[in-house]
Image 1 (cartoon, rainbow, N blue to C red):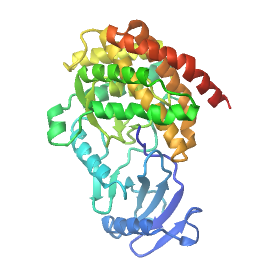
Image 2: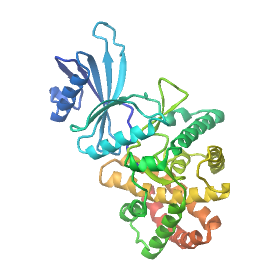
Image 3: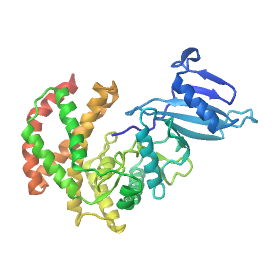
Image 4: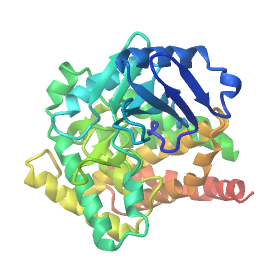
Length: 386
């Protein structure tokens, strides 16, 4: 999981080349921080002699800060902006910002990622195209079934376009790392290091290591593609200029990995829930789209579903750990409300693999799944009921 560009401003700053006027509760008495002043000075250089308003946006799961900047016509007395952009402030994450630029250049020819308007890598500032404030998740609220399906079909076709990106170009020219065994293992250990202590149970290390080994062995044999790595309803936007296209954000952690990862992120989203019958239908649709696009894929829909559930277990173990870490370490308790959905997805995937998985997977999943139900779930329910 990575951060998404938030939607609601909490700070308003009206700026032009000669003056700064601040109206905010978080920066009372015009006490602008050094970093804020550094950003404002840079923006005045980018938008020379232009009046603009800077809206600071509340942070999410990252140290990066985001702002929305609105430009105004100084010769016009009305308050209608003539342009809007997103500003990224990545003071302590220059490496992540460089990777963001690398991945942007990789993805731009195939999917709708934000245009790079201006950048200062040394200071850690970027100005990006603003897709607007309508997330994919917003499009689904109270929507009829036909619209929901249309939205997911568009999201899946966008993902197909991404998977057409040549892996070798991504690896060599744009420095995308491989989603290798070390990374897969490290991510799953977030479950061991954060979730298990949080609910207060002891981990059976033998079952844990056997499960991880089986998952990793299977995942590494899946066809390899460019993976967004957080492809879900909060990282897809309705493009405010072209509603027929989805804007894709928060892709700086992209890797080369399994062809099922982004799809399971989309259809078993931590923030949106659908019946498994609907999920299964979308999974089959995506497998057919892969075939039509002549992409590497499974020989059968059944094998693709198997691969997807394997990948889902890995992702959902990781997400359970991340959500607890965000709460315990970073004080971002709002993610605790999303844990029950993630747990339901994990249980479904483990049950599916216990019953329908290949022999090697079933041997690892069955004892782990039994331990989860006997030891983890009672403690989990007690913790989240309190």
